[in-house]
Length: 445
Image (cartoon, rainbow, N blue to C red; front, side, top):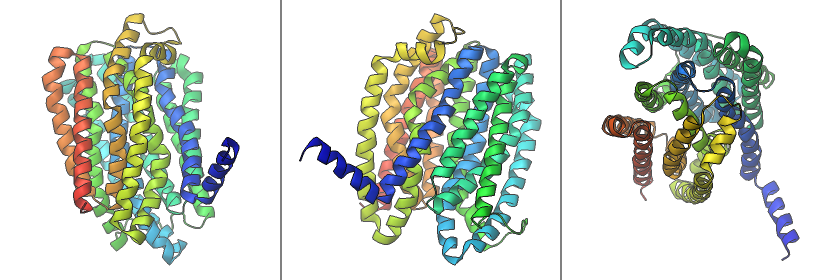
C-alpha cells in the first residue's frame, strides 16, 4: 500500500469513528482555547514583568483555580452521567433538573465567597510574606474576581450538559473566545488599571461565555426551567456524588496555594517565576483537559455501560501508552530547548531580567520530570470518574496534598524555589501511582 493510500485509509477511519472525529475536533478547539488561556501569563510577563504585583495576581488566580475546581470542574465532570440518564426521559426533565441545581449551587458558592473575602486580610497576612500594600491589593483583586467564579460554575455545568448530548465543539469554541477576550481587555486597559485589567478581562469573558451557552441550551430546549431553591431526589443525588469530587478538588486546589505561599518568602517576583515555569511545562495537560479527555469521559461512560470493565481497562491502557509516549517526547524536547523557549515566551516584552529568565528555565527543567506522571494521572482520573469513584479520588488527593506539604517543608528551606518544584513533582508521581493501583483494584484486574 502506497503512502497516499495509507493516508486515505486513515482519513476514512477517522470519518467513520465518531469518537476519533469528536476527539480531533474538540482537541483542536481545545488547543485554541487552552492556548489562549495558557498564553495569558506570558502576555502578563511581557506587559507587567515580575514584581510583587504580579505575585499577588497569580496568588489570587490560584484561589480562583481552587474555587473553580471545587465547584465548576467537579460539577461539569459529574453532570455528564446524570444528563445521560435524564435525556432518555426528554429535554424537559433536564431543564427542570438544571432549574433546581443551579440556584442551590450558586447560593452555596456566594455564602462561601463572603466568608473567604471577609477573612482574607487576616488570613493571608498570617500565612504569606506579602507587604501590607500587597495584602490590600490581594483583597481587592479577590473581590473583583468573585463574579467570575459564579459565572464559570454555571458555564461549566452548561458545557457538561452539551457534552452529554455529544456536542463538544460549541463549549470548546466559547472557552476559546472568553480567553481571547481576557487578552484583549488586558491589552487595552493595562496602562490605566494595571493588574486589575486582567481581572476585568476574566469577568467579561466568562460573562459572555455564560450568556451564549444559556442561549444555546434554551434553543435546544434543555435550558434551566422553573428556577427554584427546592431540593429533589436528582439534585440530592448529584450533590452527594459530586461532594467527594469537590472535596478532592479542594485539596488539589490547595497545591498551587501551598507552593505560592512558600514562594512568597523568597522575594518579590518568586511566585511569578514559579508560575511561568509551571505554565510552560504543563501546557500538554491543559490541552488534554480541554480536548480529548472531555470526549473520552462521555464515550467511556457509554462504553462501560454496554461492555463492562474489561473494555474500559483496555481503553485506559491504550490511552496511557499514547499519552506516555507523547509526554516523553515532549519533555525531552522542552528540556533541550528550555532556556531559548523561556526567553521567547516570557522574555519577548523585555520586562524580565536575564537572571529571572535563567531561574525560570531551571525550574522548568525540574517540572519536566513530573510531566509523564502528571499527564497519565489525568487518564486514570477520568476512568475513576466513569466508575463514579469520587470517594477514592478525594482520598488520593488529600493524601497527595499532605505529601506535598511535608515535602515543601523539608525541601524548600534548603533548595528554595527548586525545592518547591521538586515537592510538586514528587507528590504528582506518588498520586499517579496510587490512581493506577486503585483503578486496577476497582476493575478487579
